[in-house]
Each structure stands twice: as C-alpha cells, then as structure tokens.
Amino acid sequence: MRIVVFSDLDGTLLDHETYSYDPALPALDLLKSKNIPLVLASSKTAAEIAALHQELDLGTAPAIVENGSGLLDLSPGARLDDSAYREIRAVLKHAPDAFRSAFRGFDDMGLGELAEVTGLPLGSATLAKMRCFSEPGLWQGTAEDEAAFIAWLKDHGIHARRGGRFLTLSHGRTKADAMAEVASQLRADVTIALGDAPNDTEMLSQADYAVIIRNDHGTDLPPLPKEPSSRVIRTQLSGPSGWNAAMQQILNTTTETN
Image 1 (cartoon, helix red, strand yellow):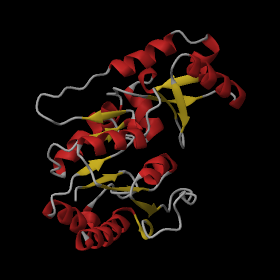
Image 2 (cartoon, rainbow, N blue to C red; image 1 turned 135 degrees about the vertical axis):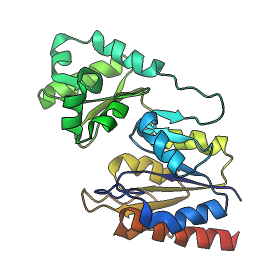
Image 3 (cartoon, helix red, strand yellow; image 1 turned 60 degrees about the vertical axis):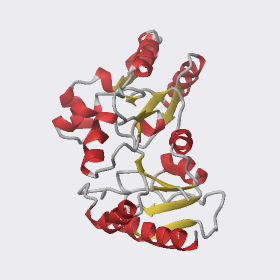
C-alpha cells in the first residue's frame, strides 16, 4: 500500500512562533523508516521551501508551492518556469488605473517594504519575491472596488483569493488540485493531509485521512464534509506537537491493518 503525506508548513509542521519542527521529529523519522513520501504544501515560494526540503532530507519528493499554484520539482534536470507569474504581471500592467493604484503586489514592493508588511527578515523577503506562479498583494481600496477588481481579473483569466492579509492572484489552482496531481504521479493508494488554516480546507477534504492541527492563532476550521469520521482528526496539541501525535496515530493504525 502506497501512502503519501501532504503537509502545510506554518502553524502545522512548523511552530507558529519559532518555525521549529523539532517536536515532530519522531513522526518524521517514522515516515523515513517506512519509506513514505512527505510532500510539503505551503503558500511559500519554491525558493523558500527548497532549503527546508533539503534540511528534512525529503529526496526527490515534489513540494506544493504558492498555495497550490505550482510544484517544486526536485528530480534531476528539472527547472522552475516563471511564465505563469509573468502572465499575471502582464495582465496587471493593463488593468485600469483605479485598480492598479489600489493593488500593491509583492513585485511592486522593495525588499524593505515587503519585509515590513510580511514581518520577514530581508533574506527571507528576497526569497518570497522569487515567485513563479502567483502574486500576493495588499488591496488598499474599498471592498466594493475590490469586488470589481476581482471580477475584472476573472474576465482576463486570473483568479483572486482573499487570505488573512493578502489578496493573491493566480491561475486558480489550489492545494487540492496540486495534491491530486502529485498523488497520481506517486501512485498513492492512501493520502494523508495535515493543515490548520482555511486555505488547507480543500486539501483536507480531498484526502483519505485529514488532520486539522489546533490553531491558537486563528479561527477554527468548520467541520469538513466527512466529519464526524474516524478518518478526520482534530488535534489537541498545536503545531508540530499535534502533527507528531496525529501522524504516529494514523501511521501505526494504517500500517498495522494493511
């Protein structure tokens, strides 16, 4: 039986404040011992995720980047293609002035400004600007104008999705779409997804086993369509501690019964 694990990062595998994954090490080691691929799934760019991917020794397992808009392919000879990002920026260039003046994307910001609005250090802000598939930004206009902007973008083939702080523009792919693609590539029989935020909901709903990590810094996710179910776990612990407990519970159950 081929199991593949898909995990969000911030607030899930990584501690919300320290960004450490140390409490999850026992479960991470268990995955390695069972040769189960771990696919990272995050809003982060490929450049941001690459270093963590290497640190976790995830081999050639792909990673889902920019909230599902694209994949980080680490197979030999693979190269990143930023054509989707350039298409988004080209559409923005031709947006009506009222929209362009109200939307300030990452590409419009200098490193200092981006570091300030994201809370990232300058080095991390540099990696966050290395985008290939999507463009987050701040909307500085009215809610009514934002709705009109989103409708205009849709007419031009661009999907806009509101996150906690940023309005992110992409070609509409979600983490769930990317998960389905990777699961097919890896010939997964069973998928396990872990997340803590609204942008994880579609991925969690699609997985065979869903782990909703306790989020002490945001709103609890509403019940998934398949809840209540023994295949949906809501952790009592937050972050990597909850990740560790849930993963060990699922892996010990699924590998013992198959």
